[in-house]
Each structure stands twice: as C-alpha cells, then as structure tokens.
Length: 163
Image (cartoon, rainbow, N blue to C red):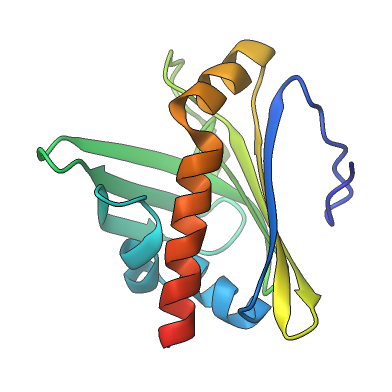
C-alpha cells in the first residue's frame, strides 16, 4: 500500500487508519490546523485536549495537552516536517521545534502522516503512524490506535459538519 505522499507502508512498523468521510478536505484541514478547532475533537472522549499550539510550517511546533477525566495531563510536543495545505500534514515527536532532536525517551514516539484527497464531495482520509520498530507499533496498536484515532476522526467529522 502506498499513501498519497508516496510513502510505502511497512506492516511491521506502521499503523494505518483510512476512511472516506463526507467532509471536504478544506474543512478537515481547518480542523487539523486551527488550535481552537483541534481542541474540540483531537482526543477521544472522555479525555479532552485542553491546550494546543501550532506553528504550521516545517520545523514549527505541534503541541497538545490531553487531560483524563481524573485530571491527569499528558503533553505531546513535536515538530512539523511537511505541510501542504488541504493535502498533507506530517509531524514527529522524535524532533522538537526547529528540528532539534528530542531527548531519548521510552515513551511512544512516532511520525504521523495525515493525507487528504478529494473523494466526490468528501475526503479520502489517511492517517499513518510510523514507528521505529515493530515493538513500538504493537504497543501503539495495543493502546488502541485504531479505536482511538477512529473515535477522534468521528469527532472531527461531527465538528466539521457543524461548522
């Protein structure tokens, strides 16, 4: 399988969520790139995204803070690698803003590709999480990648349809 970026899927290290949704690529793009919109859908309920910072350019920051129902917070900081409006967004947690290498971590780190293609009145939405090894991919899958990213996408669609 090859995504719209030309990336070749590695079934041992990568996870993919692909769907055709009935929202335009422009609305999906806005939901991904407007911090106020992203906070409304990015984290699967009952968790919430309470803070978001986006500097939408290669080397720019992509930071989110997720909060559990019990109040536990989880901050994710990464760096955009590729930004093609209404088509592709790529970021990684292995780099900090400005392409500075992130400190070594045992936490789950991956590179994410969000690819958007027009599909009739909607969008072919492809999300890929690329991991450094099969163990990281398996851990992410076990954490609920497909269910979690799928639920978040459902929330994005609901938000975009209302805007």
